[in-house]
Length: 238
Image (cartoon, rainbow, N blue to C red; front, side, top):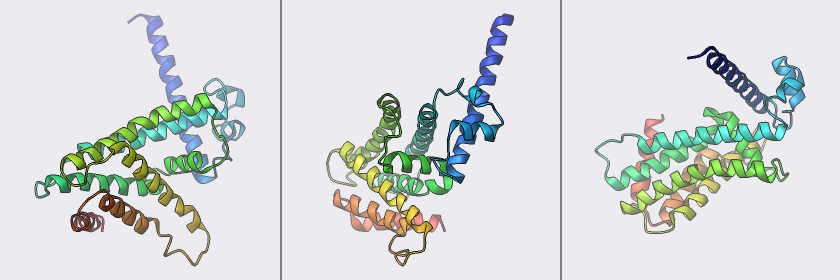
């Protein structure tokens, strides 16, 4: 390899490393403080950079937020792929396996606040904040990254239909309803930060379990089979 190419490779590698450091630090600010606390000047101070140096990587807070959101969605997509490719016990029937994968994915999403707090905070802000946080061009980039996640979930639901675990129906429409419902349940955790007499009623883990069960039964699934699969998941996680 020529010297010029080596220098170019090293330069790009250093830039990639610095970019990841910037994104990792930005995520820490969002998790420990808030999305509103994330500014270019706040981030630069945390990194001990000059604000102008950060603008060489991200032209605005919105551009930074777009990259953070896309990165978080990519991590969720990776979890989905792991669930789809996971090996399950041969003791489970084909319908039970499809239901098991859907429940596993639901559990992973409900536990985002523990396993990936940055993704939890970012998605909560982007979907729950009435303000327009991204312009149309940047929002489109985030939406494009979201499509593979919804398609992957749609494929899991289609597999459940093909195995006769649930009745026929539009898998994409069901995927959107499933995801939107889980997103709403996970955001209840914000209410639990403050003292409330409704703590037991607002338990996201219990409500998430109930939501998944009700949706699957509503789509024609066997309540007994779904309950059995959920019980097995609960035993594995205790």
